[in-house]
Image (cartoon, rainbow, N blue to C red; front, side, top):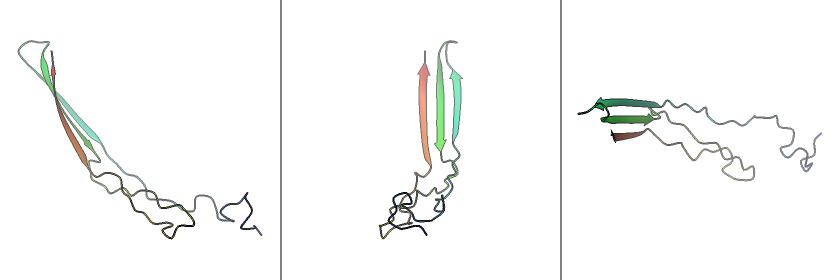
Amino acid sequence: MVSPTDPRYPFGNAGRNIARGYAFYQADLGLHKAFPLWKESRQIEFRSEFFNLLNHTNFGIPNNTRTSSAFGTIRSTFPARQVQFALKYVF
């Protein structure tokens, strides 16, 4: 029998990795297009980047403080879909 105060076993005789969070799914996409201008050396580049393209909800890790009354609860999420655009003039 494992003593609950034994420092070698801070979680008693619980197995390893018995508390897990949700899986993390994210698809990112980047689109780039270059448009030539007056001379061969000049161009405009258009870029768009999408983070978490499918807008899948990814939950944070559960509260892992054993003495907390909120033990095991999830109170955060990762950011939702983010989109950014850029326009670049190359000369």
